[in-house]
Image 1 (cartoon, rainbow, N blue to C red):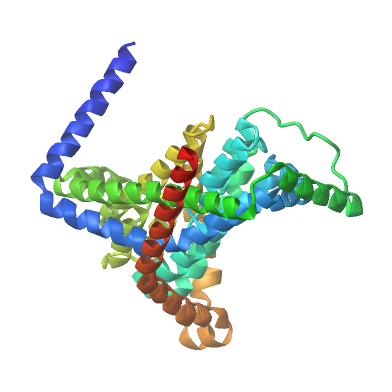
Image 2 (image 1 turned 135 degrees about the horizontal axis):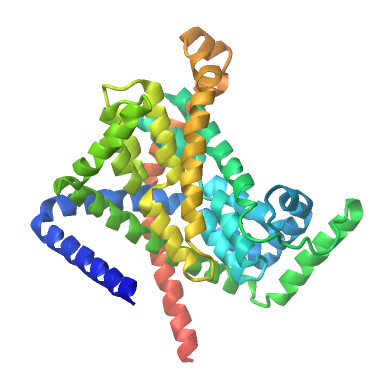
Length: 405
């Protein structure tokens, strides 16, 4: 009872202080809000919407069930999750946060996962998409496309290591039927695909409309969290709370050989990874390796903004948030460690201009194409967002009209 009352008091005081801070720093709050809005409607919304819609269609048509049957022999031994986890993992890697949480929650609601399996799955399917790592962080912030190779390798290998660690979370999951192989497995997968499509009696038009509605509702929620944490991060800076926390982090960084100048960007990155990565890249009095280590941790941890988005999605099911949060810490540590491991073979060895152009031409491809594509996405992003919201409004009105008639 005492703990519950204390929690109530802390939450009330925190929200009250946040409201007072908004009133005290209106201009700074407005600027931070605009920044969060620009990130959402220029990059996040147009980059995630196609993945969300297509994934909903794949689920409705039974393709995910087909993939689940085919990948069962792989995902069970490695991560102790059903084969549908392979689909969630692939979509999480391709589209980035919070896709892993959204699709894991959907699989749990569909009954494809137990609660423990869902907690294992969501722990290693949360990641940044390659476009963000290469286009925004490596090229946009650091102006160093080859750094993106190190960050991406460390990031995604960290995901896999978290999956191996979290396979020990909870009790052993039953394997169910003995895995089949060859044509038997293919026939079983095709049968599952057909049965799933038959059971979902919605026509294609209705299925597409539901996919658009569900995807845009999720992205509206994501946008709200991005704006909220952008403002919160700015207010913490002006209230000097970031500086106070950074002093403790500075001591820790000094003890492990990292520059203390990275403490403020690190604290900012714990709340919002985009701002944290940008601030880290701007630090002058730190070696590039040190900045890469801190950036790797920030990208893997995801920031409280990403975690709040995931928590909101997982709250719609019985999936607990605590294992997901612990997994983010593990991934941050793994990613930072792998950055150190990959630094010499993947960056230093090919850092000279001649070697860079002759031995690793893929990096030049990243430099030219990803930067161009990223800039195009920023230019077209707001238009895509506005058109999608207009379509969403019309679909919503159409559904309301159907319900009344």
